Length: 179
Image (cartoon, rainbow, N blue to C red; front, side, top):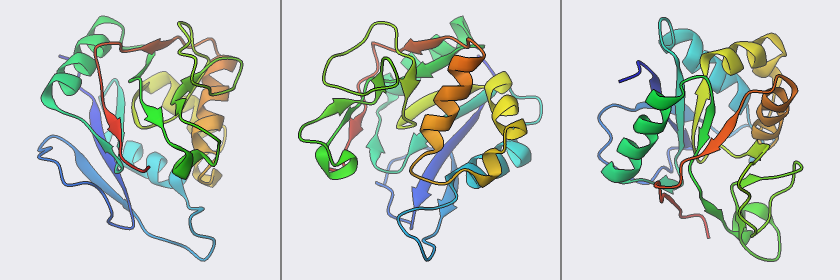
């Protein structure tokens, strides 16, 4: 099994309570521009403190629920291809996206829709693995200055720009509960 950092990103201590012993809680508190916040800085800090010798970081947002099957499926995918981004197929709801209907948390042509693409080129962090090479490229590109809600977009752009593969872990079924 790959040695990775498992990080649970908790906005304003609002995360759903899940029994996740392996996950480090990364608390992000509101700032004057809330809900905008320093997600990039939090991710960089988590990686800098916890990532030595690790192959990557598995991100789990606080408004996403997973079960042991999801966790195991994600780890199996990571073990098979640790240099790729691995995204779980998550439905995002209008409360979060401000769109008319739900969309997948992974997309194509830098766009999200209800059409499930086989070969995505963009993703959100809901339940997503980021390989070491991508994290290091993002840090060099200024990740510590990237603000929510645009951090996932910038990380996707870096992955596309360096041809880092993005894989959908089809046997994961996490739930985004911000609806």
